[in-house]
Length: 393
Image (cartoon, rainbow, N blue to C red; front, side, top):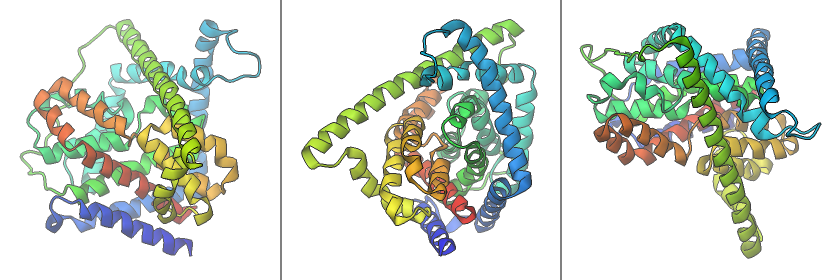
């Protein structure tokens, strides 16, 4: 029965993408089918095999070690602030972003990261039926972040037509930055984080290929990556330390505001309607949870978490999942965990449009105009990834 529901869910996601398509007649079927098969294979490999367990455990151990190193710096600066036995979210989850940001900077400075991004991007371009720029951008978004990635393609940004710009922005919104992967792994199981990151790469191209189909001319299929101005090693370290700290502060501020706001809205709705706001939106999103493979009995709670992620961010939703996850089946927790690992939320529209506008005002305005369609597509990517995982769990 679960396979039938998962198959129906897959068809519904593809149909919803097809309805929003700019050019239904020119959708390329073969690359889409191939990428769905690859998603299923990779999900099975990562979640259901010994090799997958070894890979995920290895990645999780690397991030565990990095978090331990980060705690050395955090303990030195903030030691004694928390009571013994407590684990403050800001200290244990957000501040390690600073250290991981420095590591990304070092890999960038040594030209290791750009080489990896170009290599994986080139391989992806042979599968997805799209251009080298689109493929590189998807990988780079997962490495350096959804706003920083546009700096690396700044030279080509001004000359891109809207359809190619849409794909670049959709990829940025469908992935997550490597700098916060460690934070995710403290909140949900690492195997779901790793699986989601990998299959979202393909999911972004699947949905974009349906909503926004096009063929890149061979003459236009070029990649011009903007190299960062050469800094001294310690200048670079200082810059990435500050960038990581800014991210931690911004995420912390957003969580503070959103969690408090949701608590207030829940209280008002409960007083007026006898139901919290999250329970009400949970009913709205419950059908999507069901086609993702969530049992009907758990669909309202799961739908509430999905809606929370969409209107706030993934951190708030992950906190909700950690609070009620013990009341859900392991399969539901896995499906919802995969859904949460992306930047698909309303605030990302402003982040991406602002990042592009800072580099090219005209193109920034273009992104702002298709912002809601961008969020629609990125949300479908998250639903698609959850459906794919539901076949396996």
